[in-house]
Length: 293
Image 1: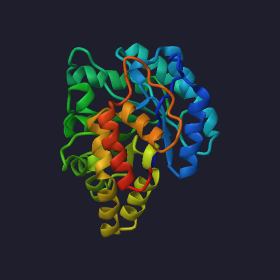
Image 2: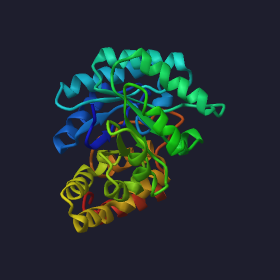
Image 3: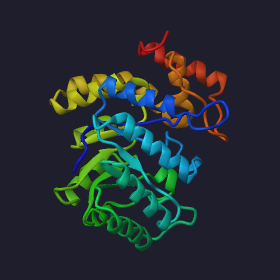
Image 4: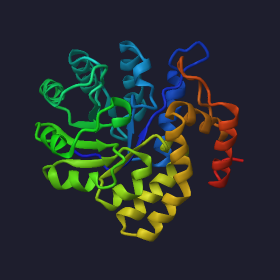
């Protein structure tokens, strides 16, 4: 099974006491479905996965799957520091009805390739749900090479790879090196235009919380072979895409929602709201995009 299109990564909102706000999370799910994204992804980086305990993670998955009600596939983040913990979360998400699982090798000590392969192998042997391998050198400190990612793609239920390397040639090289059954996805916002030109099946992005129509229009143009249109839609959002990455996804997505007049809830400490000067810069970007006043 492959996901296609714009995969919206959900913010995990909290209330004023720091508890996950499930009613607001449901509202975010409903809004993204209404705006036309193709899949939903709770418990990614913008979903503050490392800041949630096990029970909270399970509750977030339950809320998103229940709110989606089968209208869109749900790609659940299940990464954890230990293999055993990741297996537990993967099994829970599978039982809850997730369409696919995303995992990266969460690290404290830098892992060897053999350790990473064993991590993915054990998780894949524990579930039958399709798995998305996630290469993110910015959070793990490791940029997994093409040859190793292709080796991971040989595992039975690895059908997707999300690539967040800034290397502009990597998606094309992955597509050439991996089996035909393996789809490759854009994970780094600034690579969206290049990635679609190189044949990416979709774009995994937190920007959909803020500007879903821009991402969707870029995707539609890319799929239609409209290079000029794709370039235009990418250019219209690149300042926002860079800002989101440069200043931290949870705080910038939350600030963007507020500036658009939407309830973003509160962030989980130690995360704090965006500084006032940066919020003003963000407002100027949103005004230029004509999505804030």
